[in-house]
Length: 155
Image 1: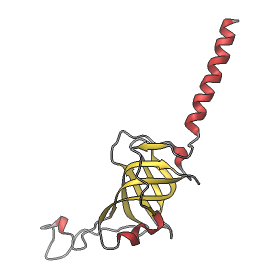
Image 2 (image 1 turned 135 degrees about the vertical axis):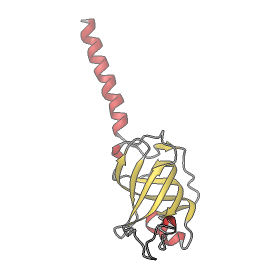
Image 3 (image 1 turned 60 degrees about the vertical axis):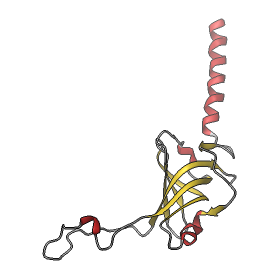
Image 4 (image 1 turned 180 degrees about the vertical axis):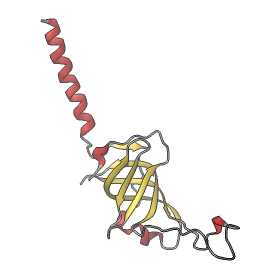
């Protein structure tokens, strides 16, 4: 009888613990808590950056997909079919896959993907003045975001 009660109580406890991991309520924080003093919508980030290549900022946006849980790799919707590729600065942060579809507030460094159009990173690697390497960029994925802290926002 004692074993039966023990099994039932342990099952109830494990179900309640499991339920806490599945639900991501408003205010759940990963990494450090982001500053919400000046929040920019992710859809306006590229225009906000203007000609700057890197800025420290806080953005609000919808998570499209969690690509890798360890290290916190995910994609944020930037509007018009564009994607912001985001990852945590510290690799020790693990995010759940249930973050997909949630609206988040993330603080970090936004950077435009740099591509030397004259291929200076291949200097001295030309044959008779012709460029050997062709680099194709995806126009839908133009921004990277290195996250210091993330908080689940209300939908």
